[in-house]
Length: 593
Image: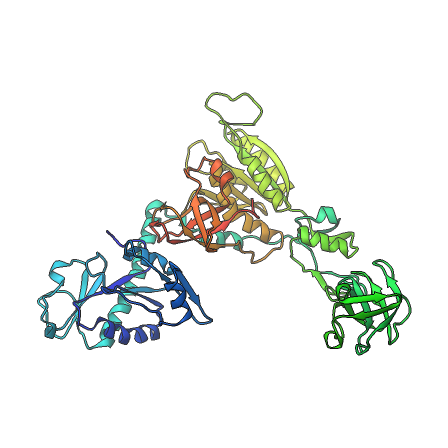
């Protein structure tokens, strides 16, 4: 067994019973937290134990048969799990920790397992040294000198032991960074992390300033060019929140009231309501002047023109069941803020305010084309050694989701003249240019020569899979993305780099995608040194926890894996693999593809 699933350093204390492991930990933890470390402790007990107090609710419920008991308060929570059939492994315990909020995991017990340890030793216990038989011991804390070249500390000198642990954490963190840098340098001298590449791209994007006034239907998925203010109060008048009877708000002491009117929605009673009077009123109908209390119909009994209320005098209060004018939106209140995307709720609200047209950022025009003599359009008989072009159709759908106008230049043959002509036209007609294919290291990728001639382009190998290589720069003043040729890589690269750039170009600054944490329900392979994006399916289990599995085979050309997925599973470069039960980051796709 190897404890490899932790993304942060593990450090244990190996000692025989009676050495004082817990006492030492109790002294070390305040010092470690004072040094700024966030520490988790896993303790193994050889005897049966119970952390519950007999008689407490959680104890009673667990003894009544709950196999898992989760108790929570404002300050802490605890999950107590019964394991009568099989003891939970140390690795499973590690997987239960939220390692994103920790710097170090200390383990007391499990001394037979292969993880890094400090041996604790006291002569008075009369036990032999452990380090000769355990290669995972890296230091000794004892009240005597051991015959060893390992670093040695006085077991009673907690300051020295604390400093050793802090140095160990720092060395672990430095090693991770060094390993990552080494992997990057081996792969490519221009290798960039996902966040580095995205930051460089966003830094080079300048938002468009052009705007236009368009109809509500044309504004869907566009961004508001300025704050849109409500021209009316919503509701327009004080109105009833339910069917019932309206009376004066300061006239609640009577046994009965005279019904003087019936007010339907869309109509009004134009006289002030007097003391002793009531008006039957429907939901949404405007309450008359002086009417500031509505009693629901179910609490009223009307006989002729008299009505009495079962609620009683004490059950009626001024303002009840009355919606005030402007309660939802007041005149001149911002209903859609500048830079907000106008989607179904916004366009419906604007229509409800009587607004017929709105100022929006002009639609972003995006030119797209595919490259390669091997690529052919759908609908034709497939030629030998050819593939159908899917990337332009995928990109079109992704761009329309963002409210863009797509200029499709089709499939461009592998010739310098054709590529140069296409790029020149695209830069004059579009606000952004996207190509797929032609940015790898192949000799036939003429696009590099043309890009160098027409613009300022960088060719990057991004520290991710799938999604590299990537070209980015400008043709004149027009941003250009050269995306990979593999269909899944195109989609992942678009989501990670193009979409954030497009949103900034449209005026949506500091946009961030939704991310969540889920529990892996299967082993997920990865490779240290790069960010891995697996296509996944997340769901909520019966305990309300978010879980995720992959869609199966994860090849960059398997578009079915994107069709079946509702999320991307993001595995960071420092993680070698994800075990069952371990937490992973997921990026939902439902609102983006």
